Image (cartoon, rainbow, N blue to C red; front, side, top):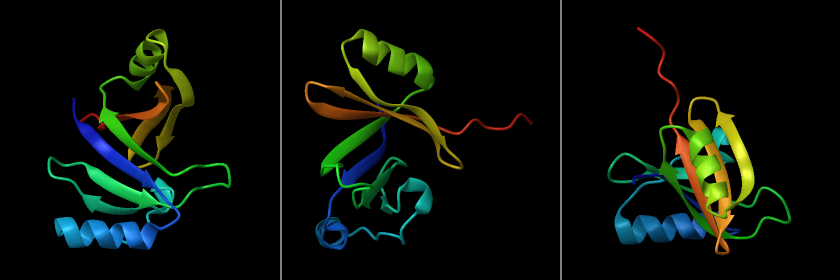
Length: 120
């Protein structure tokens, strides 16, 4: 299992980014519109840490890891069969890949499939 994207949703984006930068020596980029205006920093192993504000009034602060999967449709089906509630069906983010979210045990879990590579 590999964490591809670790998402933190908070009303205090700048403070959280500053704390991670100070503690871990990472640098965050400018807001990325494709990732909900998340400010991102590289994770060791090739993933990203994204910190963003809630996208709507009902969105609560959350820390959500997105595990890399080869087949997101199959992974979502497996999560649902195991009792997970699909909170967001697979959706492509151009240039980033396809994500989905399910909730199990009161915890948000993310799935991520990388962009398909064009045939040579």
